[in-house]
Amino acid sequence: MLTLDTEHNFKERILQSTLDLILLGKAPLLSFELIAEHGNLTVETISSIYDDVDAISLDLTVAALTKHREESLALSKQKGLEALSNLLTHDLKFFYDLEMDRKIVTPSQYSESFLLFDEYMSNELPNYYIQFLQHNQDIVPSGEKDLFYYGHFIAHSILFFNRVQLAPYVNKVEDRKIITEQIIASLFKKSHFTLSKFQTQDEQHQLS
Image (cartoon, rainbow, N blue to C red; front, side, top):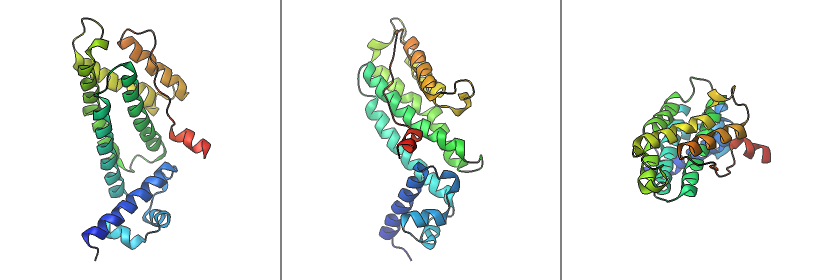
């Protein structure tokens, strides 16, 4: 029987092995056997801790959202348009990679994990932009006081860049990035707004 210490150690190794495989584009193929082989573990060890791969995915999701929540809170306390760009880029990178994973798995795979991500994006993500605007009211157009509306609008404008449902309308990732920049610029009555460059999973695969 595993002690609490050894179970924690094995759990960390299982999660890291699973994350490595997901980053390698293996999300549709995940199994106890594949995770065990990649992480130098045994199937028996994994099955003694987790009931199935979905349960591993759910633990990874909770960990990812916890990290994202902490980072977003810190970024929301910064000031200036560059800080807004940093916050948006941080979120775009996170959710773009998520959507690429969603695109390659079947609808029944990891459904509870994707539901957690969707709830987070709809219910929590706007709050970081509201907090940011409370620290940066000088960049909100004169006379506009509804920071709640602005925060939700910014958070949901990420969909124009991120959601794969929009791919048939704008095929190139760079074009979706430009559209998102235009939306944000118009919201703040600026002629231009630039999102920082980030490397997506697709680009990482091309370089590897």
